[in-house]
Structures are given as C-alpha cells and as structure tokens.
Length: 166
Image (cartoon, rainbow, N blue to C red; front, side):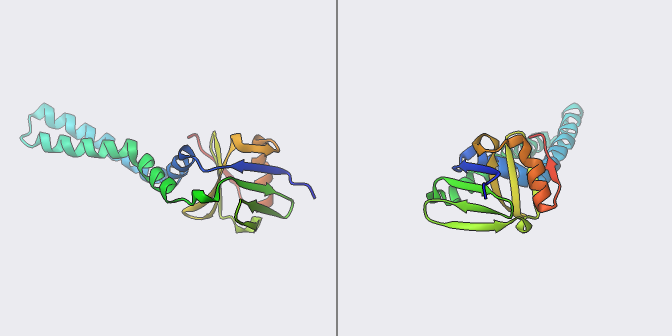
C-alpha cells in the first residue's frame, strides 16, 4: 500500500528552537506577563526616585533577557544533545502506522502512540510524551500536501490538531 505522506528531514537548529518554543509556550507567556508587571513597577520606581531602583532595573533586565532568549537557549541545548548521527530521517505515513527510517535503523509507530498534535506555520509536532515529539517541517514533505496533513493525522489519531501562530 502506498504511503499518503512522506517527510524527509534532518534536524536543524531552527527546528529544535521551534520545538523548544512549543514546549515552553506556557512559561514564555508567564515570563512576558511578569516582564510587563516588572516594567510598570520599574517606571513607578524611577518616577518616585526609589533608592534601590538600579537593583530593580538589573532584575528587570535579566527577566526581559530570559523572556526573549529562553527558547533559543533551550533549543540550542536540545539541538546539541540530539542524536544528529542518525542523519536524514524519513517518516512515511501509511494507512495503519508510520514507518520511520534512517541510515542505522527502522521502526514502525502506531497512530495510537501520540498524545498531542500541534501545527504551526512551519512545522507539525507529533507528541509521544509531554517533552518528546517528532518534528515535521512543512517544507520537508516530499509526498502529500503539507496543508492536507492536519486532517489526515487528526483522523488517524483521533486527536485534534492544535494550531498555533508561531
């Protein structure tokens, strides 16, 4: 039986960062809210000429820096620790299962193995666990339409595909 979708991909830094952004979405939202609150307090402290305003400014700068770089730091760590020796991965989506192959191994994964599905502008993330996902860049689909994949994978897994902007 012919595969409906085939993705050939090699892990890239931007893919690792996209997964980190996906996994940290709640933490990043919390950091952004904290940053906004800290900025308001910082403005009030500078207006009131508070004596410890320089210390508070430094703390606010660290939180702001974390807000804008956390996904990059985590993504770089993920990319560094990932097994890139596997080289190019091929994900072939058939009617009953996904066949995954690389230079050193082959495996089959049933559609029932997934717990969460996410689509962004450039990627699909198929989560096997809370912090473990297959990364499928839309640009790397070599068979099947990447835009039609969402409906296919939702049907096969019985899970909704959560769409996110980033």
